[in-house]
Length: 440
Image: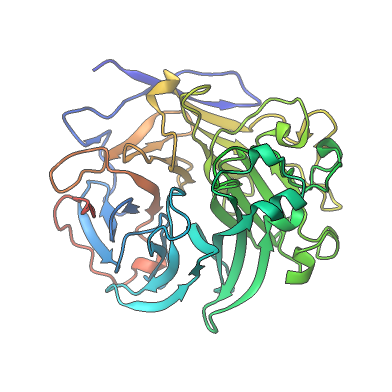
């Protein structure tokens, strides 16, 4: 098999080309031998099961839920998992990763907490995030009617034939009480009719990315930064990440003043597509997933890591980008009247060569590891890669189903280090190769 090559490109350094060994067709595992202690956690799309495997592809534990996963899954420090599961599409057919229920399962798969957020006009979907205080952030759609859309300035010819638009919001739920304690709605922060988008980047233009599809904003990830007390969401359809102030009451989050930053729930920062707010600067994100702040003990701490999916027509390849927004002493993100929110380019970017050899147009993610390497999940292929800062592949794996077939879709994969508190005292014995059990 010809040698593949890849690169990490630093904004401050010249491009270097480094060998990248691709996954061979005859084997699901490749790369040098690795210590057996790290594990990988993932849930295949169309599966009720969540798997924990070692780096040899051996199953060491699994959890099985009552219905298929709604994409994301997190291992908590006590060995429980937090994951949404699907109630079916309901009013939101075609959106993908339809959830509706968020659950915490103990190590043995017993439900310890369950919260349903689904109805005819709203539904949880895609991602959740546990906060340091134990609360859970959830992404959800809500339906707006054609009349509501016209009232906020949406062009009538871009209102879907369905007569409804799905718009995202975020809720914060306290598992101790199962009550919503905070929420933020994108619909509350639309540009006023007649205003110039370039003069109000803190607002969302109701006509930006307006298509015939009902699923307008399509948020696929949520994260929380406790140091900043800010929430970040990834809007796939806008090809942007948005950051808002969490230091608000729910009433303040619905308005344009108040909170820790004095701007209510308006956008504090957005990045990826300046054209969405009327600027000519080039688009940098393309249907991205898994935008999150790099944790404080890892390389690049405080910066934002993103799987940049690409576009089938204009950019048929995927990269992993890391950006370093500039936050002033006054708490305001740096902004340029021409370029928009800074930076103008990623601090670093990983790309395969040829670029098209890594292309996952939907789902997928990336995670910075304690070693400084990065775990990449090419979700549409069910392919996981661990790449070094120099661009070498340290490990790779392809998920197979019960028939041995590859191409099992995985929303996201997460490395769990062997000394993680969640694994303390657990018996982790290899049980044979992982074979993803899919629900047809």
